Image 1 (spheres, rainbow, N blue to C red):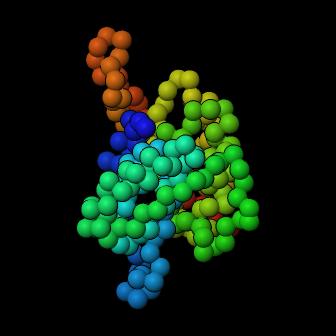
Image 2 (image 1 turned 60 degrees about the vertical axis):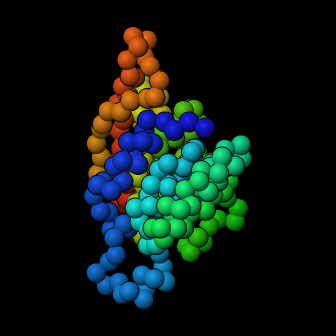
Length: 213
C-alpha cells in the first residue's frame, strides 16, 4: 500500500532515461508492423503500480504493460489501475495486472512471444533471497533481442548494499550489462529523527544483453 522513494524517482525519470532501442521503433519498422507488435513491458514487484502506470501513460498505444506482484498486493494494484482508467484510455495505453511470485519458476517456460521487451523494477531488494529470485525471474521473461532492456532503481541503504552488489554480479553472469546508470537523491514520505525529510540515495540502471542469446 506504500509507494517507495525509488518508485517516485524512476517514474519521474522514465521520459528522459535515454532511448534504448527497445523503446523506439527501428529504422526498418513500418506502420503496419508497429501496429501489429506493440512494445511489451513487465513490471516486477509493482506495489502500487506507479512505475508501470507511468510507463504506460508515456508509451500510450505503442505498448502493453503488465503489472505483477504477490497475491495479497495484486487486488490493490488492480484497484489503482482502475482509478487511472481515464488517463489510460486517453493515452491509448493497455495495462493488465497479475500474480508473479519470483520464488516460483514459471512452468512451462515463456515462449518468445510471451517474453517482454522491457522489464521494470523499483526497490526490489529487501531480503537476502531477492537478488537471486529477481535475476532468476528476469532470465525467462526478458526477450532475447539485443534491444531488450531491464530498467531498475533501488535505494542504496546500508543494510541492503550486499544485495545490490549480488544483483549486479548475477545480472552480469546472466549475460546482461549496464547500458546507462546513475545516482540521485529522493525523499521518503515520512520524517527523519530530526523532523526533516528523510533523504535516500538511489541507483538507477538500464541493462541490455551483451550478445544475442
